[in-house]
Image (cartoon, rainbow, N blue to C red):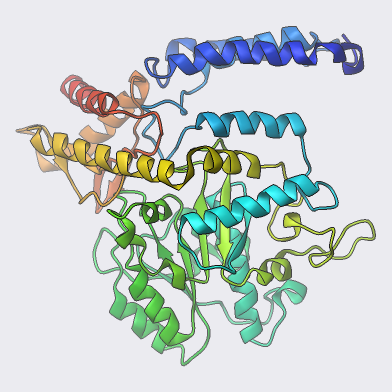
Length: 474
């Protein structure tokens, strides 16, 4: 089989094979291991020298399905609590397949008016979902890192204007360093964004009042005062990754207003607290920000790769990310332009389709119910930790992350970090549930995050049982 043109008539058969495999795989997620070490060797069957003559469509797809459905990490299942990873709702999964089927180049209206228009709808629905005012715009990107990059790229353009400079045309050479302030909750992705933008990842001035990283508002105010009115950027954090805590967004918005600073909110998963009356106080002040970054492949539960940046002054997107002239390409303001000129990626798949589909399918109330269910499951986990004699909770649980450690009676304080590292490694190797370790306020801990639409009380109870079981063995 040397040429796909010779094999084109089997495309529908290949998709039927994927569909046939999808049912059993999805049905297995509730009971299978998140990671099955015994199946890992199947991936090797995909290797070897590049074939001179291909297998053909159906044999190649069959081989991939055999290895993938056995060896892939079941991160879309209900017991993947590592990082902050959602699953894919049925509507989002089907729409993602549709995006691959249609294979749109969503660079601009000129390349796909359909892709561009669905993205416009999806972005406005996201704006409504989080209660942001009319007039905000944005762009869909691949991740929260790219959403931070896009937002801070707009902030850089704004800051350059206030220096009397055009940073898009001339770069940062000859300018002072852009002042950036945040709490100790600032995430590595925001630092990476600043690194890629040329500011340097260590440009952030951290104002923290304790080892956990809680913001020191007075210290930040003093730092802003010391600038003598020069423009600065504040990064607020809506949902810290170790315990799910929030910076006081409204207070930081007040500081930004008083000092003429750009306020960016990194809300990778915490932005979704705005959906529920029980947690919306955590995002109070979000509407006063200049930019907001978040992931859709976290709590919106659409497939990877999907993030979004929302911008108060959307015209800055085209100014910051419009491409230099090419005769065959539209510009940011051309009728044929579009979202490839409003963010870092020019070649873009129609990632709006899964977002549109899950919002259309389940609406505001469906996603609010999901957030409230997960917040309730986090409280259930917190209660189980508090009641267990060999576990210790290290932080409050404002949203969906529970930070705790193993602490059996009689184990010396100095040995607990090593013990928890070994429990964390055993947890991942065991594979029944997946939750990694972190360091919170100087102590090694587990920090399971609950954002998958499939997760139930039984999954939470199993997590506690497995952690305690492995703690007794290591």
